[in-house]
Length: 352
Ligand SMILES: *Cc1c(COP(=O)(O)O)cnc(C)c1O
Image 1 (cartoon, helix red, strand yellow):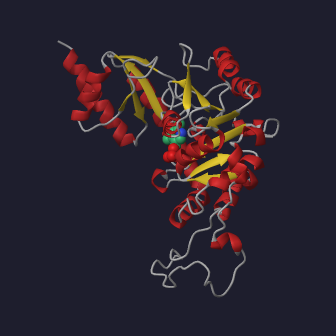
Image 2 (spheres, helix red, strand yellow):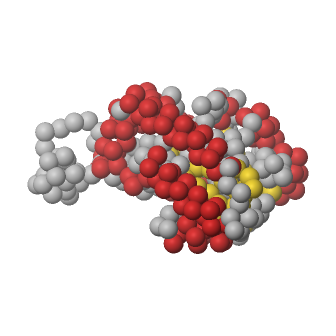
Image 3 (cartoon, helix red, strand yellow):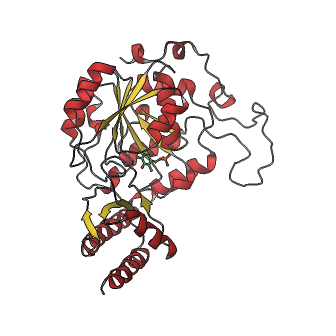
């Protein structure tokens, strides 16, 4: 039961009933939503989209195995992170807990909503510090614990047993952001924990493996009670018809997309090996995601050097535990070769 975790007023909100909510069947003449009867798009874009994206959620169930009654879609995971904070956290009173370094949006949306953030550092080897997290849960009672696995920007998947231990201990919500799960062949989703713990929720996205960052589709997976609560505050038409069609098309090509995955995984392996050979690269972190974190002698210098060559990576050096690190997305073979070539030139210039 999550009812006692929700902000009290959420239960009393009068839910907006859209035209598509009030009439769900199919009819010959639709004069109910003040739409324009001209369909210049020839794809039905003159009509409002399905507010619950039912077809897409059914397809998600078929391809990914998340039952449709356990899902709600957001305008990217970012919108879902925002909605989760808004339904559980009272501004100026409640808090969320995150492990640093991690994805920046949890903090940003907490800040926007006037919700404080409890920071727990990862261990030296960038793993979850379960004991410290439990202590902070006891002391501060955060409404939501966010866990990003595989974590951005470190690239590591956390042990599902540790995630379970935290989620079972935590009396609030535990939200596991699995944006990069598809890139870890041995991954176990926290969705498997939901049947025994209704306070778990999972985030997935179409922005990475499904190559639809521009379509803005995120998936929240949780108990039916959580899904109902999110649906109470969700803008009715948050996923456009174009995006729903994009998602359906991608999932209908799931079979062919598997080849792209093996391409990315083999490039990850190749790039990790090659990067380790440069004298100015001190460490190549193990990655379960579609990016590689490296520690170098002078991250600022290398970042500027690559930028001058037209190659943009992410400088993560300002993060706790990550001084002198760069995060490099796995690109196409040709893009990766350009990066390696530029680094090779740098290496040569160092030899007197
Ligand atoms: C990229 C990313 C997302 C995806 O966000 P969208 O809003 O769905 O594009 C979510 N979580 C993490 C940790 C990410 O790195």
